[in-house]
Image (cartoon, rainbow, N blue to C red; front, side, top):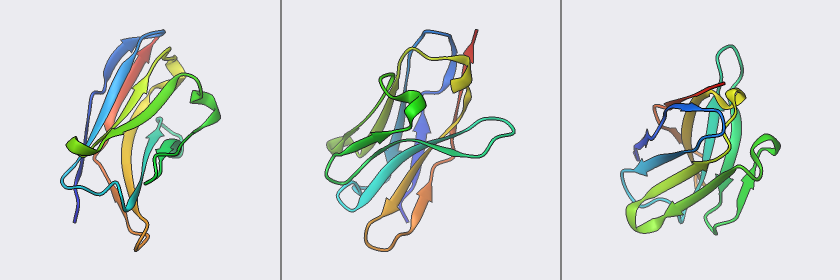
Amino acid sequence: QVQLVESGGGLVQAGGSLRLSCAASRSIFSTNIMRWYRQAPGKQRELVAGISSGGTTNYEDAVKGRFAISRDNAKNTVYLQMNSLKPEDTANYYCNARSLLSGREVWGQGTLVTVSS
């Protein structure tokens, strides 16, 4: 089973930027939809951004224009560039892979992003 490992979280001031990385243990992007989710304390996990096997991207309304999802096929890594961060972006961020073949999903362990005001 593929493993996903996130990194790049941390503490940043409002208005700052962070780039999250999600490294897959093997090449999966051609057969998986890759997504970033987040979960704030006391709230449900929500979809933030996704990138299809063909490279089409989509974003939650609250992050449009501020966040950008991308991938490096050679490095088996998906990124989430987060700019103009707000305190409400504070959450654990999770990488998710959903197989187009089986529908099976794999999750990373999460990385914490804290935005101070």
